[in-house]
Length: 147
Image 1 (cartoon, rainbow, N blue to C red):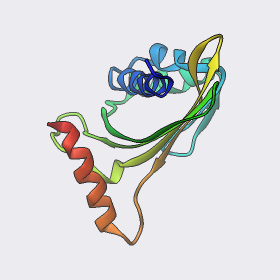
Image 2: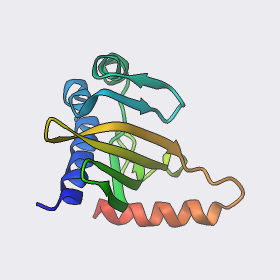
Image 3: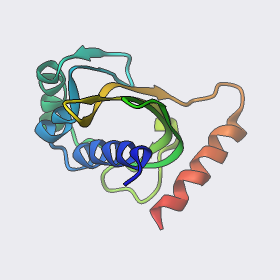
């Protein structure tokens, strides 16, 4: 498998762990000194702190599952890759994407002991103030993933 496909698979595993609300699987995908910057701007560093951050979220809230579209995946060198996506959420009990939860997601992956791991995952709201047509365009692109 090409290296960029491995990084795409790493991202997919992250999203599947989120969608299954599995904090252990989610945190395990990060490098030892991996970092997450959440939708709300919260930051955590290290697998343990990432686990401690997401476990109560999954336990205490009905987190919406993600759908996504990979926009770019590129190797920066033999041991570093950058992946960018757009992502949307379908709240539990709904059938459509809630556009105000759309996000740009960036994942920086590094090879650690020969395996791709997440060094940084950033989830940035895509509210695109003043340009509602761009929000709708993004939402329409994400809706295609629901079929």
